[in-house]
Image (cartoon, rainbow, N blue to C red; front, side, top):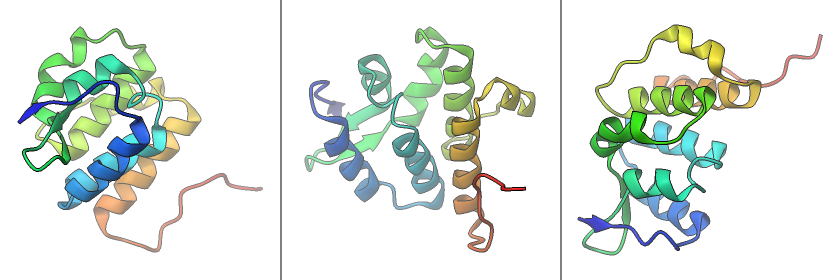
Length: 130
């Protein structure tokens, strides 16, 4: 695998990642990254996470992200979000208490990814109107 062209638009990368992510764990993690979108738009995150495949596709290098996570210049919320995404996709651990570092939008994204990963299609995640 070779390193991805950092100038490629994130939307093109998103479609290629969707095609690559065939396992339930990869699909849920990629869906979370694409829905959140801000982190994939960052060159430094794309540099450590994305690899171009031999056939011109794209893949996530979860092990590279795990090795580089704390070297990236991330806020606590970004670090927590990527830590949770990494735990969905890769044998990695994150303290559940890190959920307190997430804002409402990122928490909802992660909850939807977990529901997707569970395979239970009857649970909806969104804003509750009371």
